[in-house]
Image 1 (cartoon, one colour):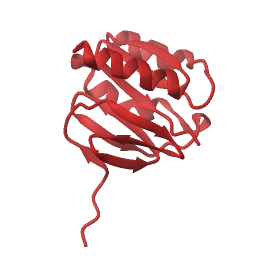
Image 2 (cartoon, one colour):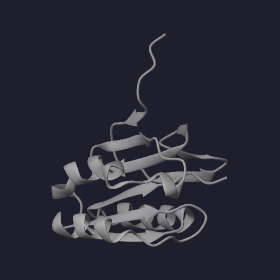
Image 3 (cartoon, rainbow, N blue to C red):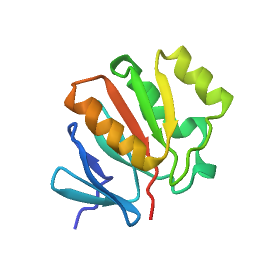
Amino acid sequence: MEIRKAHFPGRAPVDAYGGGGFRFAGMSHLGSILCLPSGIHGWDVADFSQITLDSFSRVLEQAADIEVLLIGTGADLRPLKPEWRTAFREAGILADPMSTGAAVRTLNVMLSEDRAVAAVLLAVE
């Protein structure tokens, strides 16, 4: 059996969230996710306190294709660290933190409008 890192090679709306994971494109993923222009990737961050600037490396690598980054901070809204805001601003990305539920809903609307949006979504129970 071959076990590979979680990756869906395309953009897709998130159909459901909760129970520690997400459903999208007829699949489900347990844990947090990155929704990027290159696809949907598993994100090995389980709690907001675990996030570092390095946690956003894939986002920053794809900055040329991202105008807005939605940051689903879990069940509650959490402010972004100043160094994160600086890195996103320097990359030309508008970062918008919100609860994961709000980020999922906003992502789906922006995807339907074909906007240059990405999201990092912390899984919630």
